[in-house]
Image 1 (cartoon, rainbow, N blue to C red):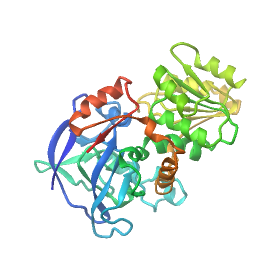
Image 2 (cartoon, rainbow, N blue to C red):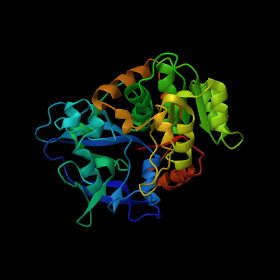
Image 3 (cartoon, one colour):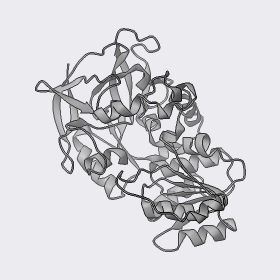
Image 4 (spheres, rainbow, N blue to C red):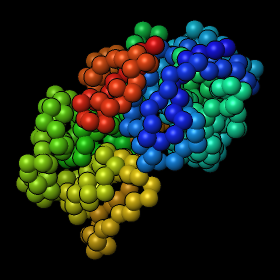
Length: 365
């Protein structure tokens, strides 16, 4: 079938809206008619050349849609099912999946680096040549073919043009608190960065009964939104020293700090903001070529520096739970939606994201 998709031919160039050919789903694959997909910094990293990717590529990894067709061997999904497409494929069989850490699935990364579906297949073509897809999904397209384990069924009454954000940003931020940090009631947490992930950290901390919740950013309107979502204190790092202010607020340092920007200086500040024995969790993704310098002595004080990929999400369990929390008004993810755009307007939406004017803009098909 022929569909429209946003194709990136090389870094530092605009996305091109083109008509491309999409093959029918193969074994264990499903055809999904897209309803909406979020625009994320991870896509922007590829556009700006900060992270590697095979070209040409159809980006997009925060998709939500409706199953249109199932391929041979698909047993858990059927046409008409509403699905969210998590950013991370999970095979369900490798050691990480079996041990309860599916976000670290050993089959996912090779497929992502190849720009293919699991197993190496590519279903998109232009003039007979294969197109790569981002995160085995490529949701900047009217239809996608994905592996059935890259589609999580959700309740039909949940708006897909909101819950699509559970594919990446929300699952990462909330999961960072719930699955990785596992904060206990009353513990203090600070998040560096108030984008989609950082604000989701705040929502997760609020749900988990955190004590003092502190938000750090450079933009006042983002800090205002952080307060609306549950932050008790906000720090504009362009106007005051965040480390000093956090030490004052907490009386010696936070129990947990979460860095969701992907900035080396911010990581260093976040690590310096925890007390002896505290934990700093890295969520943001700096360019892969950058290195981090820290004083080893701080580790002698019992500090922990760790990371999380996609919030250590168990997508097939967590996403339906988060949808229920949203529908029960306990996880207000709709507040992260800055606006909607058409596929034709996607380059302008990425400019808004790069210049800090939005939290999450969503392509609505």
